[in-house]
Image 1 (cartoon, rainbow, N blue to C red):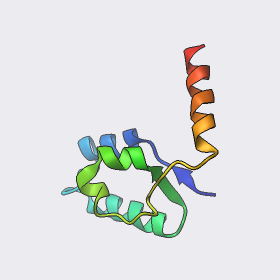
Image 2: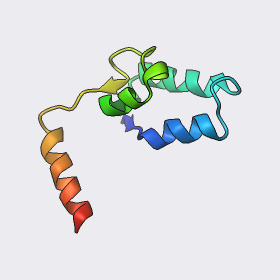
Image 3: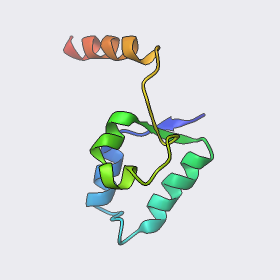
Image 4: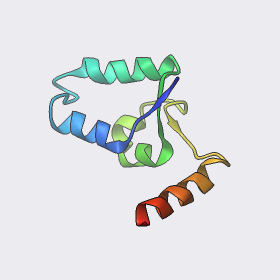
Length: 81
C-alpha cells in the first residue's frame, strides 16, 4: 500500500519540528520511502513546494489520472453538503 501526502505534512514538518536544516533525516526518509513506492503526493502540492519538490523525480508528485478528476468533483460536492 502506498500513502498519499497532503501539503500540510510538508508545511508543518518544515515549520515546526523537522526543519530542512535541523532534521534532514526526515526529508531523506520521505525520498527513500517514495523511491520504495510507498509514498507519493500530487503535482499541485509539488508546485506549492517548488524548491524542495524541484529536486525530486517525477515519481514523487503524481499527475492526476482519468479516475482522479471525477473523484475530485465528488469530493468537492461532499464537502459542500
